[in-house]
Image (cartoon, rainbow, N blue to C red; front, side, top):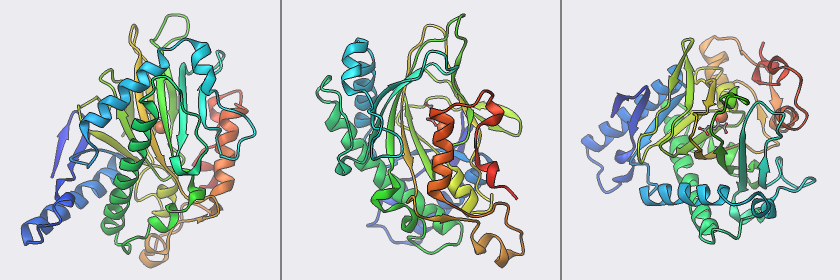
Length: 324
Ligand SMILES: O=C(O)CCC(=O)C(=O)O
Ligand SMILES: [Fe+2]
């Protein structure tokens, strides 16, 4: 079921949680949800889901705990500070963007708990359990969305999971805190960008500020209680030869408002070779729109943006680096 709700298409995933029903009605409901997801990914690159299997209570509690962590004094937050030289693509832990950055935010980054890389804050003490549970629930939702996309794009079941189910994928959750906009440092929360991984899932508080570029206009992705926003990242855009879109988005800060979000990045094994699939090129007589690359190479280019920032936004590496 799709309905235009405050800008982004809304998809009800309930039909995928009623496995006891195998009648024509259930099949038709699933087929129409799959169609709605694919249509949203072709046009917006973004959609919203409801009845996604993640308890509302866990969503709001995790956002509240995250907000409680970021409200602590700097020296408390620094106890979970990210350490350089870590074994992960981006260090796990707390990080405050440098004051010269146009983006005014801080974050806490957490990989899948079983990998053992995380630095959790001791305060609030319920934080770790809640965020670990988010990882578990979001991983399940990630698999469901990957299966929906595989079916909707005519690929075999499990197709995307073969790219994403290894520990070297390094899926992570970033708990983000955006400071209120001020006259001195403006209102940029996150500059416009596309996500560099496979899929992104976003939980946000009720402040708003995320905007998605569609046909040259910024569409606000306004908060709707209990919904999760999903978007396509660059790697799926490349695999599908740009049939599915990794849309440009940004976060605008508001005066007097602190904003909190939890973002789950579903990534791909660093060793995987990424190139437009034959299903979307040779088999349909279309030329590839990207040359192939090893995921690790692109991830390293993207990290360079973050840790050795170029002078102008135009010099940022993005997926156009591989465009043909
Ligand atoms: O906080 C948000 O709403 C979006 C964050 C985002 O776009 C990102 O971290 O890539
Ligand atoms: Fe993003």
